[in-house]
Image (cartoon, rainbow, N blue to C red):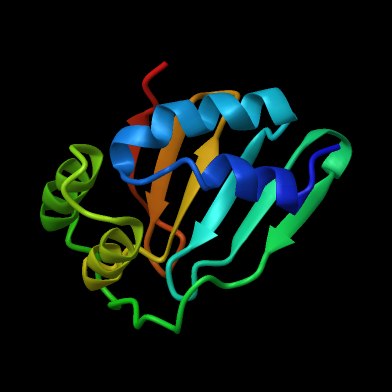
Amino acid sequence: MFTIEQIKEAHAKVKSGADFPNYIQDLIILGVLGYDTFVNDGHVEYYGVNNYNVSADEKYPEIKVEAFANKERFIEFLVMHQNGETDYLTFCNHAAQCGIAKWRVDIIAMTCTYFDKAENEILIEKIPD
């Protein structure tokens, strides 16, 4: 099974949203089926087969996530990030401003779903191969 250290090595290669597809390919090789990233503190819960899971501790000081989602503005920030215009922490702050509480990457379905605080799906996007 995969370890947090292996995941951190793969994540260290990510400099912007433009690097995300290669990161997903690295996770597939490790056996990761998906993960949830929590915007408020950056901790991530990874999961694999047979209910295997590991968690990475928070990455940054707590960010306040707005109570209501602004999907349109979030999409603008997401496109900027995917084009390599923002770093990870800036993207997380933008997500929080737009009411995004977490995102779930499903490696089997190759989707990334963004949720608000009430666990409502705000946006589902296909991950490029």
